[in-house]
Length: 199
Image 1 (spheres, helix red, strand yellow):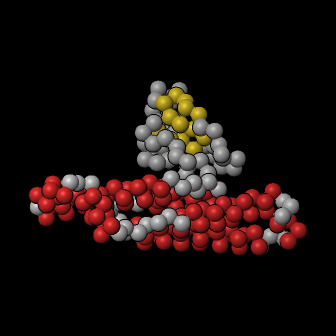
Image 2: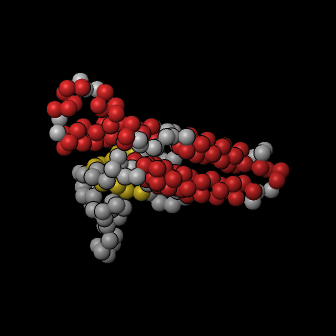
Image 3: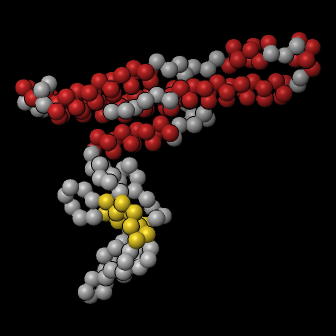
């Protein structure tokens, strides 16, 4: 991963024709003017990459690995899960994405010469990725996403005195149960988003 440097433009950079700026943010095409600070990094192959201060380089920008970008996409999907969604379906969708990536990684390993699969750095790396993805799928699918609202209603009722519960209106009872359901969903979501997808 390239190192990011924060620099200050010493002058205004224009081509000889004056039609194209040579110090331009790759995100928003902002022209970096003299005296302005900017971020700069460079891969082993290719020219320098420029970002204005409003668009600092992200982890996506700092890698050209297709595998890493696939992991970032999955992480974004996980972070995008909210308690109001069907958590069981969300887990299934994430599991399918990870499984697809695992199969693609396995294909990459299988396409290597057999003698390099378990002896070369690339082969060992691919196998580690496969093992980590498989472990993640197992952990994810072990999360219990079921919500028993009848059981939760009984739990809420047990938290109140009998007389106090009887005095509550149906609407108030429903609100208390709904609040408890949301707490359960958030607990499940925290467990899902707390799983590590380090590959």
